[in-house]
Length: 390
Image 1 (cartoon, one colour):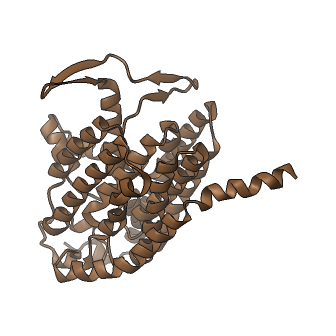
Image 2 (image 1 turned 180 degrees about the horizontal axis):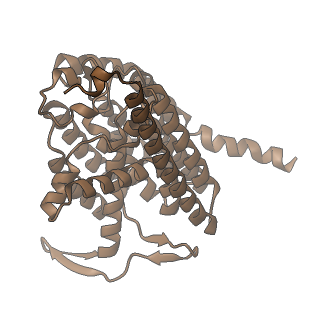
């Protein structure tokens, strides 16, 4: 009887946020087709490889065969800008809205003019620093022995415009790096219809569940609204894609990164939940460093702005999987990592991190095997004319 009495109140905690979920879903379901038509009308479209110049370095990572509308991320994120009106004004939330607004503008400009990745990265650094200064900050990190490293140490007192500010450099650096990594991880993995939006949805579910469990109503409300807008957008974004997230994929990733910070659960948990995009980001980064060997900060930034086919999606595709199978594999991995991240705590979280890393290494080695096997088969099946053709 005691358990049955508790059950309704536990359910009510989640049902309380249902209007935001439904509202966001209906918004995206109605507005996404309209945004798609507007994007095509004003030429905010992603051209297929056949319509691009041979010198275009991004041709090899374009999968679609017809022009596809962009600007989808604007539909996802616009309702979130109303968060202070819906959930109350807090310092971190105001900082969040201003930062996301700036990234939306950057994304719209990129959708129209295809801004260099170098300049996008530099803008992201500045916006991330602003967000951290506005309260979206990591104050401590759990180490493998289940104790916490306090980042609010070695304060610096700065006087600016006649005002005194206290800055904690370690917290500032770690928080900024986290926002940059998650933002770019979601942006970089957005190379096949539905994957970035779906991973954001899965991560959003994890953030929502944790926020409700911890009684953080503002974080839960923002997460519920995000889940609704992505849920209504996904039917138009999955294969065959009618609209892409576009340049605002960075802003979508930033949203997840910021919510994971303000929802005070251990960063190690979110590291597992976001294991797929972060691992993909790390593997691609290592691959590009080996290829370009940047010897200065400017070269490093330029390297980040390049494009290529080092991503897991391309590796799976080159290994013989079709686009839908690639999407299924990546969503399966993301779902598994989310369950592991939410299920483990304490020292087991460290075990979860190593497990996630081990799985991703095995997956990448397996894709390497698939690609080699496919190449050998193609060489074996090739005709003499194909083998010796120039």
